[in-house]
Length: 363
Image 1 (tube, rainbow, N blue to C red):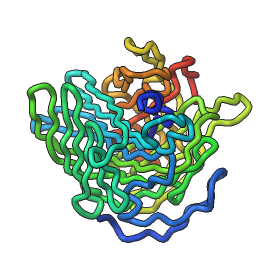
Image 2: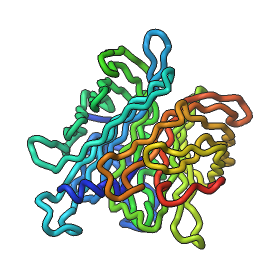
Image 3: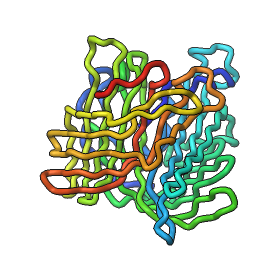
Image 4: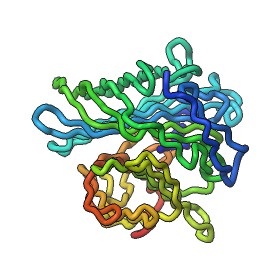
């Protein structure tokens, strides 16, 4: 989640869905009393909040079985004039696009920053409709989207349809640093379409995951976070996070959210995430954990998560604020057990805040 709150470093400097769900989220440690989420309205932009993102990742195969990971993420940052009174715009966007060629062990990515200038940029407030820089997202039907993302050496053009109900993370509302965020996921989406790498146009199909968050997100108390999503072959879908705090006397926040095979949704505290190795970026020099053992006792989950390609760093060529705008985001394989039975699956992992100090061996 899903994501670089201070990725606006340079951005600041340059400057129809499912029926309504009435379940009420429990209050977060910080923020207002939450309201129930409603669809499709809450798939759209919430311009009164300071940060929002729509995040799509997934695992695709071509007709030969060759595998690819992909990411397309659209960030909105609002209220810029509060921090930069002379800014010509109050809202800016950042778009991140990536393709992992798993067989060739190559990672392709691109980042763009775009000031909000309608009609060149769009963030619809009635249903999901986005356009800025390299990304467009359009609603085609209930939880059904067309996603396009382009970069200098590739592109993603996918039709994504959710196969499961939305997963409301902690009922749809979570604390985030010293702030708060509404949060839901579409954990299992059928993906069909085309990816482009160089001059190759490749027909693909597979599964995708979508996160959408918006709120008053404040992460000054955080060094960064480790986030994962997993789609297991027993039809269990899981996301988990470890928020690493700046204060050594303040415990890290650790929790997981699961959409179980019977459609039950469970929010559980207690995530044990153990790094099995490290990888140093040849571009930024940042040292990231690489490979993990993940244990969530309340879900009877014990798995090993392995990157399909070690170098999947989304490094920002325009960065002016170091680790705040470059991060590791990559496709992974999952092998282990859940409830005593062997499971396999795919996942995506996001690692932020590793630019200023090496990771500890266990989080």
